[in-house]
Image (cartoon, rainbow, N blue to C red; front, side):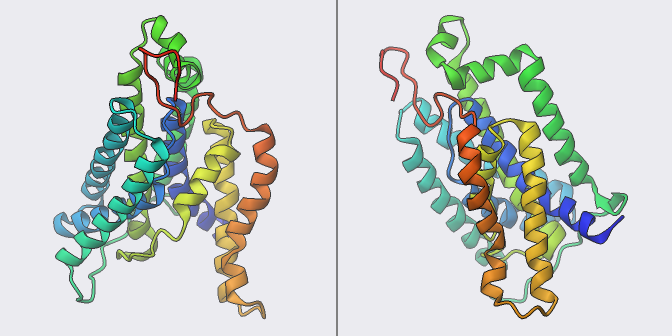
Length: 292
């Protein structure tokens, strides 16, 4: 397979996991801004657990569980305590990032970090998580639009009062969506040391979490369009990396900002047609007529 295509498909995996996790939470009305921190947490936990147990699979599972804890905390604080989603999400962003850095320094310290083996290729020069990420996107599309459970989730994010009146448990739905969504974000972070670097570093995420938020809007909070958008932004990321090592007479700072510039340009047009869940970022109180 063409090298550029392989690199692009591989690079889109973390975008897919994080953006689909953002979409899943958002479809229930929970808008997380913790992606960057959760990816760092997933990268640190995934690396350290893989190093300890000699298994990337175990590292991915534990990273997902760590992310789920933070996602449950966000969902609980905003659903039961009705705290501001942006404020809690921002606090969890810093907490997750700080926890990742602390865990790494407690376990590894200042020593030269050992590398973990990369995820093995299973077909066409691609690792198993590539196929899992694509299959996840297709499954989420089918589940959201072809099943009763998916319809109930979407109704909670669109009109929780109406969903509640129909007997849908809004609280439980938001808790599950927020927890699973954050687990996917952390798995997206764990993928980075297992494929790209072999080690953890505080700058390993490099803004991918923020781009994933933009991807959710770009894709109109629909899994199939998020899949396409992830491929586009991954291609921009790979092009920037290729340009940096090709010896072109272009300042590396300019090349490094290409993915973010592409994000801004695309979002200018995407916001015009993006179908955002009506109650995204808003808390629901069944005892009140006002949802805030």
